[in-house]
Image 1 (cartoon, rainbow, N blue to C red):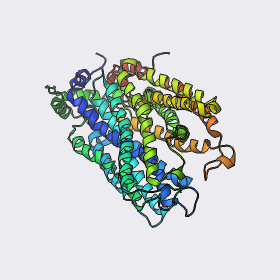
Image 2: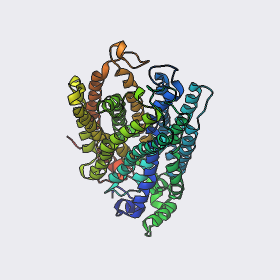
Image 3: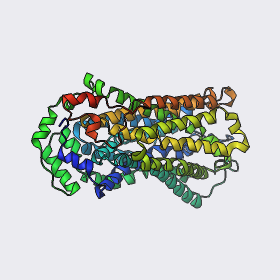
Length: 535
């Protein structure tokens, strides 16, 4: 037999869907719920921060965060996430998934609370303190990406593995919704208790002193779901694939999975040692052998995630156009500070409910039927189509009678991001690399995505500014305009289709079959050449 498979791993591969699968989805998924809440809730309160700390007396409009401060407040967590993905991804392969899993959660709890307790003697001092804690919050969040995906992948059976990993990622949608709901409840309660006139009616009175508590409560709330998950994360046993294939402890792997699966499993010490000596289970990340076997795979996962996140995080470019087009958010001077938080939260919650969340769960339903490759290619294709459909006749969509159509086109773009590469780029890196490098390679792929997110969120924020210096947002230099920014994003999505060709199909295969682990020499060439099906 060319490929030796441990009985404990085979038992996991063929196991029927059981209660432990769902508990693992919830434990790992609650981490992603918290990640999404913490990353996206900041956008709900940035306008409030501008009013509190940067409003000038007698100014015709409420204060806003200066461009450099806004970029730091919104982007520092993304930078921390990128660093955390690389560091904790590597650490997860060195120390084990379970040990590192608890560290990331503790960091997230502490920094969520500390973010809401940010103080300073000046406005910039307060923002600097907030940015410090948001960076380390992002660092903890970054660790959750490779660890959650790897743990779910290594616990799942091969028949429904894609669905389980996608379900963990889909909890991100509920985290975004939770951020909106918390902001709605908190702002509604404060608005009911502390009535205030609009900025136009009375600038000073439109910002009650109590409004400073709102953003702090919203940011600190992210610690609650993380704290609720901590106990259950610590009770989870280490994954059998790490214990057997990386730590080489066959006895512990069999004992742990016997409890999980409720069946007796044979301890295969000799087979574990024999497998460990094989060339297919010994090369490192920076070796020629890795480049030969998985170099194109890693290029495929990093490039597609990078390109996807440029487009996905650029959605901030058109949200203000959409919200004003359908009158969800009127001019700032016609609202008080608390009402503005409520309206922004309502708008973003509705977008998430109608567009973001359904796309995630379409992926969960269909990924093990259609396959990762098909869904990713389809998603990039329709994102390309809808981006060009918005960009080419852009003036048409800005006319008042056509603005509802603009909203529909926008919603479809991000529906197919989530029923497409936003989910599959998370799933595939957790399946196709060897166990001893799986968390590291997922972390590298995810970090490439966050680099794309930083470009999408901030590079295109500058690029999308009007060419006319008189029509740019305050503090921004002229750019290429929204239309040409959308054209560039359409091209980026098309390039994503091309790089998807480097990503292998993982549907219905065991992790060891995909990675080429445990293969004998005469089987290695066949395993290394497993590529995407021709299209």
